[in-house]
Image (tube, rainbow, N blue to C red; front, side, top):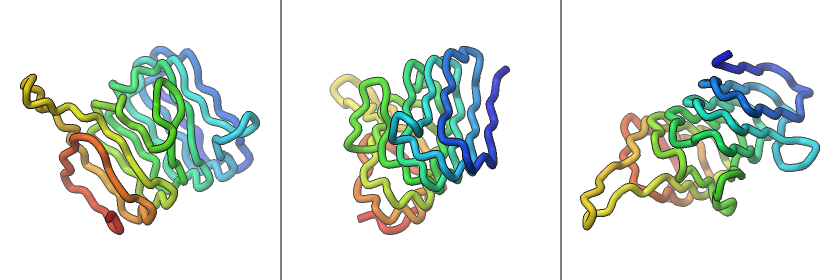
Length: 166
């Protein structure tokens, strides 16, 4: 199995995807009661080392999720649009911001209408003294992220849309 698709499960409160070493894509959409912030309501992704796509679109109460040992540097697509994701937990992340530093291969990122996110950290792959100049090149949407104050990291945006970023 290379993909998991969970959709339209309004009563679902726990999702635990672990040890799926051949899984490349996870889609979890429209699970209205998935919040992710307690021991009885959570989303955990662990040991999915070939994962390249994570789509969590339209889980309107999802505040956070945990991702560990899933080679986040392979992930090229991340969609948290129409959620309330403010931070993630897992492998050495800073939970005071949406820390996507380990997702250094992202090409498409969307957090459209995520009014809860205030700060996003992408990888900073620029060091002039070492000749490193690798920005994260994103096709992104920050539209409707009314709480977004700052984006950190070395990012080039193409075809991006945004509003209310100060």
